[in-house]
Structures are given as C-alpha cells and as structure tokens.
Amino acid sequence: MNIDHINEHLQKSQGFEHTLGMQFISTPEPDTCMGRLHVDKRVTQPFGYLSGGAILGLAETLAGVGSIALCPDCKCVGINVNASHVHSAKEGETVTALGHLIHKGGQTHVWRIDVSNEDGRLISTVTVTNFVKPL
Image (cartoon, rainbow, N blue to C red; front, side, top):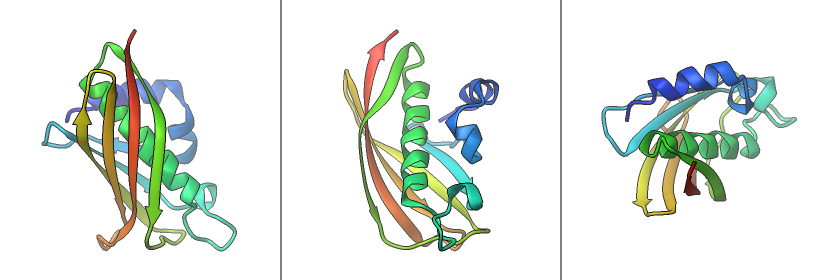
C-alpha cells in the first residue's frame, strides 16, 4: 500500500504521530501498511519499557493511515481498539508495526496490527476497528 501522500500530510500537521516520533512506510502488498516507533523517554513507562498506551496509539494511528489510503475521500476514525501485550521492548529499541486489513466493509475496516521488536519477536497484537464515512 502506497502511503507517501499521507506521510506528506502528516508531516505538515505535526500531530500525535509527530509528537511520539511515529514513522509510516509503504508496503508492496495492497492490504498492508507498516509503521515504526523508536522507544525513548516519550513512550516508556517508569521502568524503561515501552508503554502499552504508546503501542495502542501506534496501532490505531497506523490503522487510520491504512484506511485513509484505501478510502481517500473519507473520514476514518477508530471506534474500537483491543490489544494483547505478550513481550516488552526496552528504551533504545525500535518496534515495527505491520498492519493487515482483515475486513473492508462499507462503513467499517478491521485491522490486525502485529508489533515486533528488532529481533522480530512479537510484542503485541492489536485489533483496530475504524468507522469510515464519506467527507
């Protein structure tokens, strides 16, 4: 999925994704998208591990980027986010989120986002449901 045009818009907006240092990357598959997040003080809990809230923010934002790429003339907003955290990432690491579209309906998209550490070990799996509405 090509998200270059969305990245240009996100860089101008300087929003949540910019504040936390999220990066979004195009993928060759049409129903996938990818994001990265460097684990630093902005996104860690007091013990130096990546916060579950930051993971949810990355996943929901990535799913939104994917839905907007699929439906550029629509507003796409998260209406449900569900996660299971199975491992941790420490400060200094970079995590990668790979999103797979698992349902594309008329008004909803459902994404499965797998977040992995630099060694490819699964950190979290997140399901995001987006509401999709024409502008």
